Length: 311
Figure (cartoon, rainbow, N blue to C red):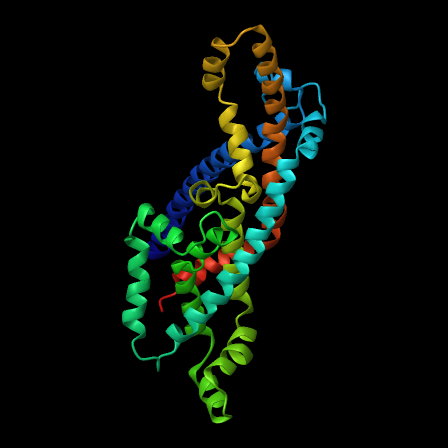
């Protein structure tokens, strides 16, 4: 009788603790949700609002005097289409190169019969914590003759060590050694095993690293800032960066103080154009990722779980 009463009290106590924990958890997650959601809603509302209302700070949640002028200005801005084309090129070609090289590196590192795989894995991992720095990398890119070329946006980031690690772990856990032995008995070479055995069985991990690489290329702007000089090669994020920097209020105030009336009128028109472009361009730049992400979220989660497996 005493034991049953004690068990019932423990259950009640545990249940109350759980309810308190879940209540706090829900409150914190709700706050975090709205903290992340509000900037997106504000940007979306501003992109559909009258630029004068945006400049006056009248937009808080819903569009003020809705208009499509911002999107019309973006569609008429040739640099946006140029940047979009460059970004798509870097994302598609860069991701293809990334996935091919990652599979070529991860496959031998996953084989237990590969001599020296542990020292090589240590060298790869070492680069995650220590690097030569930006200046040596810039000098290397320049010495390779790819400065101010499309290759400069792809080659320096051709392999991601973290993606190599999770790919190697996936291959070790998923593909049994007996399958390799069977292919060897049939006379298959390592290249044949990679193409005919490993790649067909690695669909999930290829999807994971492709998404990781593609999102990285889509959001990348720093390599373009360092390596590119020709405007025709700039990605979309660099075009957006230029507009955002020129739209900083302090910078505009300092410039406007040194202008005469004619220059001030021209600057006002330019400020109006930047207000039109700013938020609409942010929406257009992030829209593809926002649309695709809900459909591929499971692959991101799977990639994190693969990386958590000991291998």
